[in-house]
Image (cartoon, rainbow, N blue to C red; front, top):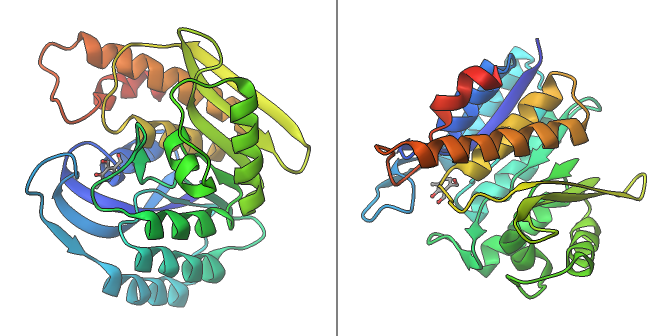
Length: 272
Ligand code: PXL
């Protein structure tokens, strides 16, 4: 069985980051090791959330794993929380990456043109550096605009997306994938660029007029889970797009849905 290490916060209430990645990747049939970057009472879209930063735990946990000789088939990072934590990730990659370890980075920090409350431009710059060390990165357009310095646009054409992919590729990752990309009216999906083959690829679904917190984490987790089960990146991205779109549709139908997260539990059976 493959083994993934996922590094993100634990938002105790909120259906995001580790509370999505752990159940989803495990249920897809891959051992999922977690390294929590912080414990928050809720995700940061709630008011008055508490945060306990776990920076001082990363090195001792890694020391212990190293002494056990543990190896990872993939390392998947999401919401990291502080610039210092990003620096620690660089050391962690150096320590645990082998020729067979996939580094998958979702530089979670922004959406809809704005950085999340905890972040600033210095954090975006650090995230850009980290993305340069990845095999695969999956920023949304907002995150990519903060990392590349390109203007964020709500209306754009394929040339804008290709330029953004080129600037992301210049950061250093092998394959760059932009999420939340609409290539024609009423559609949404991904567009990517593989720097080794020089090929662009894209996949689009019908756009559902609703958005829920945690959908990016669900998308990335399904993608990592799919790759670990042997899907090609393009197949895994399709599965992640389809599953995320379906889960948004199911969430929309639930009259009792919580405001703060996507109902990923409702579609887990179909995923598995
Ligand atoms: O879903 C992304 C995410 C992860 N972790 C925390 C967040 C968010 C988005 O707001 O606040 C703590």
